Image (tube, rainbow, N blue to C red; front, side, top):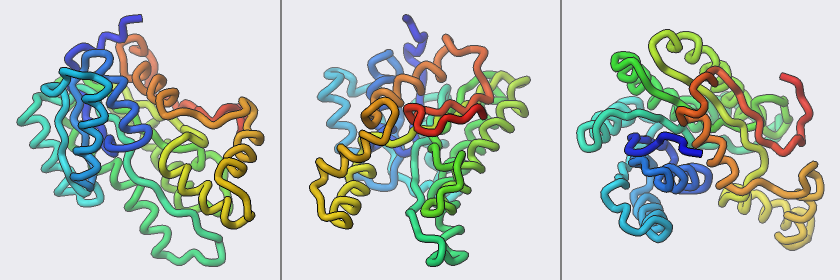
Length: 266
């Protein structure tokens, strides 16, 4: 299936690791040009090397831009620079930020603020300038990688879940608001996925229960209906499809990708 992504300019917030990096590799494989944004310049350079190992000869189709996306001015500046160097952004994939898990009795107002800064505003700060430019041109796609925590009020993930739920509403609302101007907006909610963040969580769980990381992973996998955690590339495949012309009538969708661990209708 030709996803018709050849030469599209894709900006990926949080593109240096995990799902964001897997998305970058997928877009490169489809002939797109990728601009990766992350706070850490060293991580971005490592991501560039990884992408070139997978796609030799793609040097001209990869650009990296260090920026702190919690800062609205820094985010706007990186959008300006990416478009100055690479041309108009056709597709925005937001995949940056994560909120820490905290027991309810330990929560303070600062935890709620921090969760919104880490997850919600890092997305908004890229969406705001980019969607307005897309609307002026009459076309564009935005895909928000959110997280399944926004569907269920899990006691250890309340601030992060609130940020995720907010991003789901933003995705659906912007799809309705900007659809008449040629913009599609969707969201994907991954469940447990094999990333560095998952590995760190497994290490904590393993220490808490006196088991190995392998045993902790086996326990986590056994609790999932599909019997295993997701690979970043599996999430990326859905992202690429939703950003492609093949999904031209999908907008305002919130796609769950948790392997049916939460059997919900809406």
